[in-house]
Length: 106
Image (tube, rainbow, N blue to C red):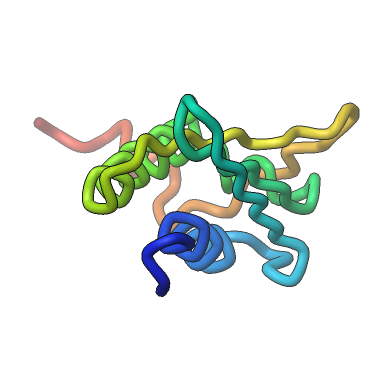
């Protein structure tokens, strides 16, 4: 990864690893006085995987990007492009059933 595009390469690699349509992942990089802005575009069916439950995946990605940016002395922001009418799609099946989780003793 080059120093100038390390942030873009990082986002592209991580997102392609978690979506169902990796060939449609596009990351655009622009630099201005505010820092680096990465705009992420994915297949509308993959939006749920990128955002995550309650935005947890997107938040984690942004946190890691801050570290990548700090390492390269740059402020990096991530914008996730959500086209109008996109469908976040069905959730992936969970390994455990909810009955098992409810019956667990803490």
